Length: 221
Image (cartoon, helix red, strand yellow):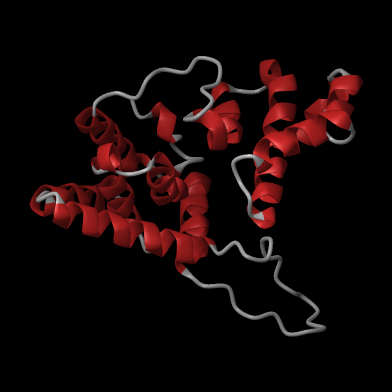
């Protein structure tokens, strides 16, 4: 989508964020926070995509821009940012939107959910249709499972297990029960939102990830 719009953008600015000094400067800033080469490479690519989206922001629908900008939305608020509302209001918005999921947005939720629930299978050397996998060292499914275990442990330790389960069950009931398999993931997302005050924000966003394009986290007002 962005590639098609960049033909009308300032070419010098496009070049600045795809190579040269600006990229080196961005990479240096990232490596100060992320020592792992694999993680910093992924973060650099994400930062480049966001920078290009900013160049063509006026040509994008607000929801499109929010989806692209999302990796940085919480730590570096973008245009039109609003502080997060109280947790109960945020969960109410999530529960209100869940039953409306259908068609392509729901299919995308299911596709992302599968990536976050299935460990990647080894690729047979020479396979004609080799799977495209992420950078070596990044395991979305493992990170997702670890974040969910942390949420459950934190809920137990803080004495909020009962309320936590109520939020989880409410989301599972509100999610479409049409065979695409997103019911459990809706419960996980709601549980992450409910515990957001005692979790690192990156854990909350990871647990919410399947729904981030269909209903951006920052839009739960």
